[in-house]
Image (cartoon, rainbow, N blue to C red):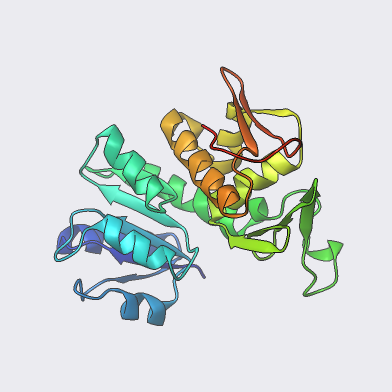
Length: 246
């Protein structure tokens, strides 16, 4: 049974969300201490977090960063803020998806199911990563020109340096590393990250690519991802890796 932690200070909305999660067979808890949410969250150990932006004491962006510093648990923002920049900020601060109020509950559940499938279900087992393909405890990985993606740990390794990735960063890295030197269409990347592509702003993909680029820069690969205007992105590890890339 998946556990969903609901961070929403409106008691009525929180109760509706909790009831909906339980109707679908999930265990759900609502936050009570908005001064310090982390002890409650860590005690419950959720597989998914629903997070409002407008909260007492600290906003949802702050709590998303705090959660992200400790965990890669998927986070769906739920907010009355419908502006494009609010959604971009949610993704930049570590969120995986975004839905606006008033909440369309069936759309929310579609997003919840999609995130859980990608993170823990059948979509988390992409080609070559089925449970029986390797001995228990083995570290499944992709290698592209010396850049290694440790898929079981969601980490990138290059020249002895290693960085941890979020779920979406890991999925992006996997898509690009399966076709190094080739253009991967934006539509392909969108479909790999989100089930309901029609609800995803194109800027959301751009933000996630930017975050992956920053991780690659930390490894010393600032020009590893090329933008192919009007087509998509390409992983290129040939040539000198100096300077920035946009």
